[in-house]
Amino acid sequence: MNVSRRHLLKAALVSGAAVTFVPRSVLGGTAGTSPNEKVTLAGIGIGGIGNPQLKDARNAGFQVEALCDVDDVHAKKTYDEFPQARKYRDFRDLLASEGDRIDAVYCGTPDHTHAIITLAALRAKKHVCCVKPLTRTIEESRAVLKAVREAGTATQVTMEPHTSEWACRTMELIYAGAIGEIREIHIWSGRPVWPQGMVDHPKFSDPVPSTLDWDLWLGPAKKRPFAAQWPEDSPYLQMACACWGGRGVYHPFNFRGWTDFGTGSLGDMGCHRANLPYKMFDLKYPTRITASNTRMHPAAFPIGCMVTYDYPASEKFPEIRMVWYDGGLKPSVPKCMGNETFPAEGVLFVGTEGMMFHDRILDPERAKKFENVPKTIQRRGGVMPEWYEACRGGQPASANFEYSVPVTEFVLLGNLAVQTGKPVEFDPVSLTVKNNPEAEALIAQPYHNGWTL
Image (cartoon, rainbow, N blue to C red; front, side, top):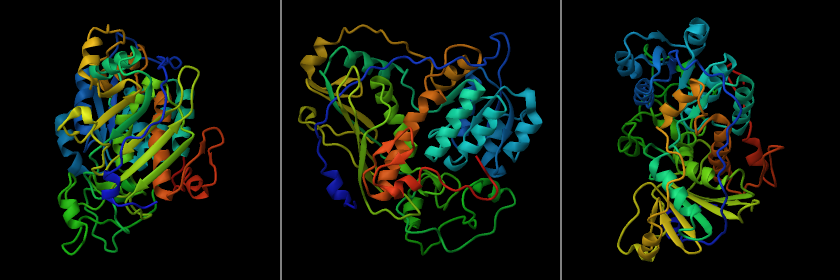
């Protein structure tokens, strides 16, 4: 269904129903490094978010020994940050050459190469941390799940952790009944901050810089010519110039809006926003997903969308509805917030006895009543400290791959509803979609250029 942005912006809060408890799943043993030994790390895809996240890894205790990127210019800042690290262009060469010199692998590449890198690292029995979303397709996520179960190593996805102070406090308040029985969760993001809504890939091409291996950047994606920047007469130039990635068509950063390479705003931010609800209510798979969005073309994700997920009742809780918004779309601001407005990113919980925005109870009287709810949930140090602890044989990271696959598939299934314009009723066992063959065809997508899972 195609709808206007104005229509989406008028979307009001709806009533659903539910809750679920969040057991702390300890997911099988990991082959941890001795607590007395250093944990050596290789970074693959280091030019974008990889730079700050590798610095976070170093601060957590990892020893960065090797670095790999297909773009020498984009990676230079990180190479300079870790001058002692051995450098590679091809991740396969890194894994083959480093062998036992590295214990762990960080993957910070574009979405379409997450699976081939994480699978190669897991098959080499390395601990692995991957940026979100873990994969671009459901077939890939299931392959990664199988591989991590076989490897038994420590894993982590770089989602906003549900072990932070505000996340834990939110859980404690909701479990204490601060707003009654949860009916709905509304989550949103101000993304995209890159071009989306393109009708097709560019018809022009540019020379590939000698500092970039374009074929390696493409990996298993369909082969297409390199395009550096949108030309002056392009309708997408203004959109690109206003975004974080500048005028670039695909690289760096602007891959996210293309269906061949990225997963759109939902894939980029949905894992962050949905992580806490998934943990808090032990969510797994919705029974039905529907989407409303601006015009969708096969090549690129739409400028804005609203995706509704309906979850079945569990043993502890009734049904629940979760709604995702992006492209500037947000739920209506509750009357009790007066003239306040919602920020670009947020989570709103709707219960039978009130509402919470993040960990803030919106009714002042109820907030006062529940201000002394005790702290009972463990706070942890963040993405990299959690992973480091797991690599050294401690408790699993909170967003380990086993936990993260359903959260990853949350965004991927939502994209199926957006891309097809039809409801998605997904069977997580048979990997089929009822009455939506177009969506089912996107669960497993072809690999090109000789790459395989």
